[in-house]
Length: 315
Image (cartoon, rainbow, N blue to C red; front, side, top):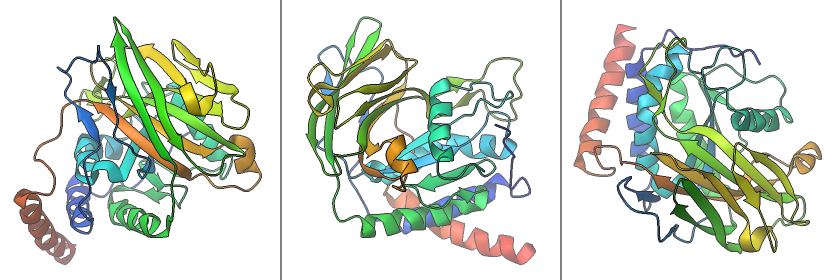
C-alpha cells in the first residue's frame, strides 16, 4: 500500500492549538486503567467494567513528517480523553514504513473492505465515521467523538485481566454482556508504546513512536472459532469467546491491550459498519504530564484560542 503524506504545510503548532481547543469541548470522564510500568503484574490486574470507549484508528507511517510531528502528543491525547476513547495506530506494509507489523496491516485490510482507497497520512477515524486527515483535522475528530457518544444508546460491557508469568503476558476476558451477537467477533489488539524506530530507517521525527499495533487475535462470537492470531505466542478460547478468550504475548516494557466487540469481516462485507459494539483498554505505561482536566488545560486552551486567531490573522 502506497501511503501519501498530507498537510505538510501545516506546522505542528497548528495541531497543538486545535488539540487544546478540542479538549476544552470534551466532558470530564474517568481515566482508563493505566498501570505504572514498575507495578508487578504477577498477581494479575483487571480492568474496570468497561465497553463505553470509542475506537479511534490512526493511519500513520514512520517516514511521514507530519505524522512524526504529532506522534509525541498521542499519549497526552489518550490521557486527556480517559476512558472515552481507545486510540490505536496502524503502520502499513508499504515497503517504506520501519515497522510494517502484520497485525496492523490486517487491520488496514479490514478498513479496505469499506473503502479500498485509503486516505493519506496522518488520518483518524472514529468508529467507522469518515476519515479526518491532516494536522488540522482534530477538531473534526473531537466532534465525531461527541456525536458518537450522543448517538450510542447502548454498548457491550467488557472486562479483562492482564497477568505476567516470566516473559509472557496473558490477557483474558473476564466479563461480557453484549448485543449484536450474530456476525460479530471479540478482538484483542496489543499496542507497543515508545517503540524504537530502527537505525537507518527514514525517520523525520523522534526516536520512538507510540501506540503501535503489533499483535491481534479475533474470535467469532457465534461459533467460538479463532479466526485470526498474528504475532502472538498463543490465542485460545477453551470454552467459548465470551467466557475465556485469551492471548499470550511476549512481555513488553510499555504496552496497551484493547479488547473490542465488533463486526466480522463477512458482516462488514454484508453492509454492516466498521464501528464497535464496545471497547475497553488496559495500559501499562507512564502517564503523560500534565494530568488532564486541571487548571493547566484551561490556560492552554485560552492560549490556544488566542494563538489560533493570531495564526489566522498572519496567514
